[in-house]
Image (cartoon, rainbow, N blue to C red; front, side, top):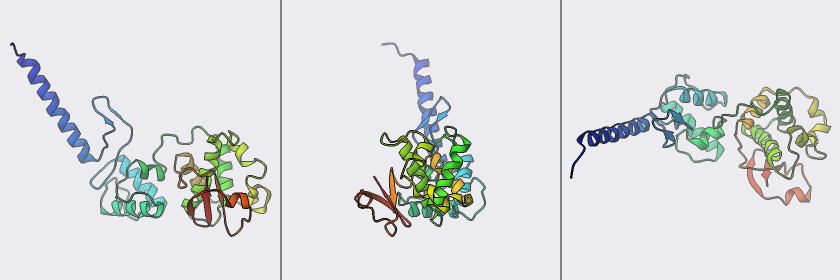
Length: 235
């Protein structure tokens, strides 16, 4: 039996290098979705000790939402971990202090769609609905209303355009009352973009109502999957 020493050594080196890369990726906080040798990555998993642009994005978003008070320095330290933990608790998702795929999605950072599939007019219309329907609700509650609108666009039982959903007869009472003509809140503009970027605090709801204001028996018969502020979100 002849052993090709050169090939054996090369394979051993490749195995050692691969193990080193995987170990290094783990230390930097990357998930197993990191594609080795191809320079591709589906998403980064930031955790305590991670550094880089991904962490910076997480810190900026948490700061916007009021969960993070520290410096936006791209270093995932104790303050960042605590902020992520607080955010996860507020959203009712797994609390582990790690900015994984679900947390990134809820932060509006889990999608490469930066509103490119919607025109500026459509984004402004979504913000207008959010502002009129969820004025006074928490930021999460505002994003949730935007998510319901987008869920309807994607649902076969509703019009397949944003304007079609918004102006569908009887869908949103706000288009016929004074709230529709009030200035759009800045938070609603941000909420519209976060909803478009993939944050859906409702978990897929296509209806919502305020039980203190709604007596409609059919709406109250819908299955409630999430309660955020004054709104019940349903399917």
